[in-house]
Structure formats: structure tokens, C-alpha cells
Image (tube, rainbow, N blue to C red):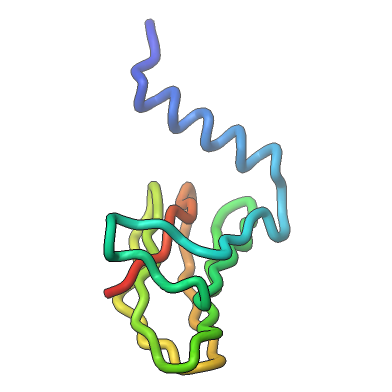
Length: 105
């Protein structure tokens, strides 16, 4: 039986999570989205991966309040979050969810 491309992608993602283990895996200085939809450079996003979940922190270092949404791969996206200047909001992804990008909303 031959594995489909979708199954191969899922297996690759699982292998990456298994190899990376726990702790902070990646941080994004600027998240990318469709043209005109990316959050500003002053919004910092960090993904904290654990074996069965991921927590994503979105910190607003801008001079004013921003609205942002966390986009997940293999998981539920966050709702539109209003983040005040200097504050951090969190999004929790379960099971196979991986952080994809942060966009304006």
C-alpha cells in the first residue's frame, strides 16, 4: 500500500515534533501572510512546542494596540485577538497543531 502525499506530510510533521522534543523551538520576528495582511515587525510571535501541544505567544511591542490572529497548521486558528501595547496574548494548539503565521485581523 502506497502512502498518499497528505499522509507523508503528516508523518514528516510527527517526525519533526518527535525529533525536536520539548521547549522553545522557533521564534518569528515577523510573521508572513498574504500581501497587505502581515502583522508589523513590532509584533513578535514565539511558539513553544511540547510533545502533545503547542503554545503560541504573540507580544505587541508596537506603539499602539494591534489586532492579530494566529494561523495554525493541523489545528484550530485563534480568534481575532486585541493586544494592547506591551502585552502578550496566548493561543493553545492541541495534538498535531503547528504554528504557521500571525496575520492582521
